[in-house]
Length: 409
Image 1 (tube, rainbow, N blue to C red):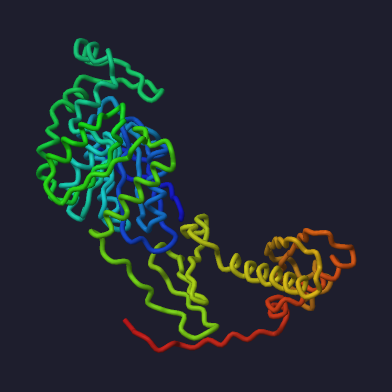
Image 2 (cartoon, rainbow, N blue to C red; image 1 turned 90 degrees about the horizontal axis):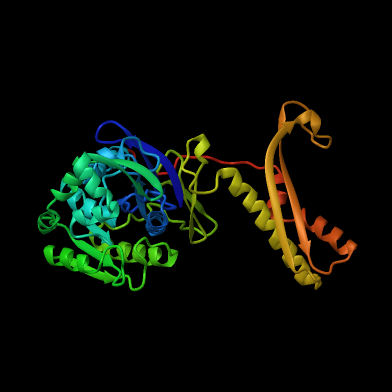
């Protein structure tokens, strides 16, 4: 799984800070996540939900609404309508860069926002809300006594989430003008409502109102004793698991790998289509992802080619030492092998046959734990050089390359 920082243009051209959490492999679908009132994309709830969805194969975009977190703009001059427009802008960016969101998930006020925005995202197949209010005006209670000042003087400074914001009268008017239950009734998409019965911020009665306003198919899941912000990772992971399992029936079936490792000893590597370099590796009935780091244009979603090469030598070394120790009944308790690869000038290598240019160098450090004598440790160090992969790297190797019969498009 990888998490990538990005930004995209909002409704008025301001830059909105975002993060895209990707699964370790091709994404089955993309989701758009809206955070709670003044929370931000990096809140515990947002982070846990996005990562848990990515772990279940659903790439998730989370972002800061206008004026919050790392996003540009003035929060106090925005309002609920601006949040909805930001969501639509986020969906537009996903559509252009990857794929339009098939799932829209909102937490607290973000849940109200996805209910209002889903109708403008035609590719959205399912909507899920977590602790969402049934009316947007409910959120204004966070402003406390400042509401009277705003109404009387046109604006006031309020403290929200530990930060001061200058809030104007039109901010209040925008929240009061929304007719959310009418939008819910016209949602025309499967809806999942998640809510904790003991939620002290947004009472569970709001979940009932949302559920009753929605048309079928609709579902309700209790989050039991979870707090409103889902600060416990177990609660966020549970919510994400429920969302992923519920939404699966509305998503396209995951694509099967085109290639399979048929013959024994065969390894198959094929592009996943995600990013420039991500590869699916099929070996001995197992699948893993290989990639390049972000700094060279990859997604950072898996080990790179040289990482895999070092891993092959390291695992072979440890296995060989274990086999030898077992055969000789040595008190070897644990083996750790650390490896690094670099390139050095040939003239700096005293025992290299190559005398010009550069040569590859692998540094291998072996840690042996156990009540071993000095001669036993020295012998195990010698045995390390007998591992088959070590011998292969030191032998003459020929790589035969040919075109495979297949489709030509």
